[in-house]
Image (cartoon, rainbow, N blue to C red; front, side, top):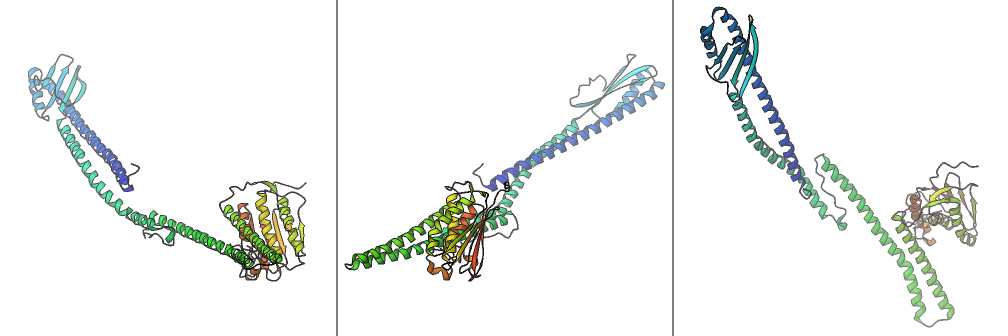
Length: 442
Ligand code: ADP
């Protein structure tokens, strides 16, 4: 049954349920009719018995012996044909009608009654044939048995037709869905204007397609951007090497060219590493074991790492940490990378000699504050996008991946990241971690 179509299954179920219902209906009709006919027959019998008893009471006053028999036979002739009657008394009186017959009818209803007249006790048995009832019931039975399958057959044809009509949009949707592939993800399924489950299902499918479409667009954009970013350092490396090789040079000149090659290779390595990190963190926390750790340590790691850069730029890094550990569930290397992205930007986008402030409070909020060039309101919404760089930042050698990496890592830690910035005055980046509120200092 599993491989059959919905239509087939619907029709089969429909037929089964209908058969059950009709059989129940037919059975109930048959039974109640029988009950009704039998009770009518019984009423007739008891009516006859009462009339016979009354008649007997009247006649025994006037007649006795053979005369009484004749009178009783006369009475019995007025009974419905095929009736039997038997009367016995305590005095040995015995009367049968039809005379001499044994009450041996098949399919009979019988009624037994005792009464006494004077001090003589009588027992009366009346029987009548149930043949006509049985005929009626048989006829009804035959009608039901013959008609129910016909009704079911007609209903099934109607049901199959209806379900085909109802499911026709499914075929159309299936055909449309089959035609959609990665090349034409912008196509949508036809939405049947039926206002039913199918319409809702198709709409849901279409929103899913839209999400897939934008995800695929984003991915290919990402791949294009990544290749584009890699092309520049590769071109620089190649030009430096080619220039150096063009003619014989002083060793000093070779050294300069090689140093340029090394610098560009480092840039490339950094880019490739960032890309790898991003790709990996996109697929969740697999390969990034999350353990309980102290946020102060992760922040300390990142600060240590940028000390050299700060000294080079004659900048100070002011750090303020709480005295108590700030426990979070996280990955130390990933958190270091996150803070590094923020610190690196704060140093890069601030004038030499200025100060960068890093602070952590006991409720798990990290702030990285600089007094640098700031971010304009037009650019603020885009800075977390991959490969986004503000115009002013172009010359700074970044790839535009730092903040998007930071945001991905924050999300993996259940943290939120946001920024307040004023152009020309500086920026503050906030990362707020969920800290279990169990710890009370002391
Ligand atoms: P990049 O490698 O260019 O620094 P990011 O993703 O780290 O890439 O940052 C994206 C852009 O956001 C930067 O190009 C810069 O324009 C802006 N930005 C980030 N941090 C700061 C900051 N502290 N001050 C000013 N601008 C910033």
